[in-house]
Image 1 (cartoon, rainbow, N blue to C red):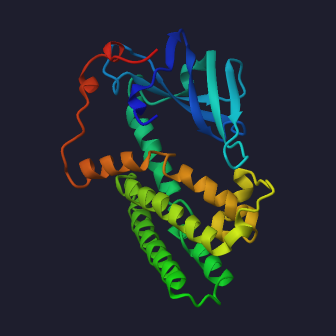
Image 2: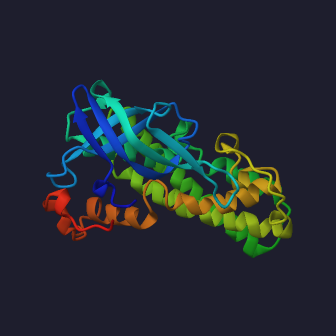
Image 3: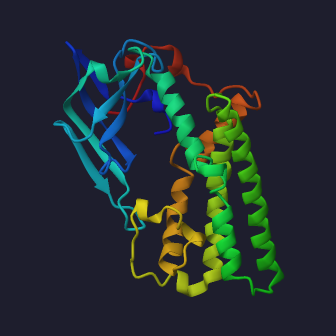
Length: 284
């Protein structure tokens, strides 16, 4: 969830191995992954950010149960993963014991860069293809309001592309991914919803006359929403766009991060940061 540091999946050391018990929901493509990244609580007596350790996990090993979740698009790209006495070698631990939060944040920062579109070659995947396809499909439209909507999307996509290129330039110098990933991730998530709404409006009734033709996550790469050439993919893109504002950190969480780390606003109060994790009140 949004409070990643409050996770409850436990890893208990047993010689040269760790015994893992717990579960995680909304794990993307876990059903096709050979290896997984696991952040588990190894010290419940430490504050929640300090008692975490980062592991690599064999997703096909005994004790790991992956259950796909069918979403509104009809696809099943997300999963719930259960760990039942799953054994992980200590040699598969990344970093020091108890230092998992730093590794987790580094992973999240790079995930947000990818979700923003900057992970693609040139940092140009966000707007160029979808917008050009949208313009090509509706270049004969004369309604000034429609033309204004498309022009606004083009402007926004250009701004995101430039932001991504600036972030890519920093990474080329060896700089670690920072808050700029949250900026473009938030921009892209909200932009994609507007893009899909406009595409759906322009297509009219044909866009919702969907017979349930589904593409897998891998098959949809490069075909999202307005970038696609068939109505079923436009409908699927519209439904899938809502997930962009949740995955990798919700839009509200992104705004909190930007307010605190970029604008220097006071941090959101969190009394649980300074007490042992085991003493934090939680539902059972």
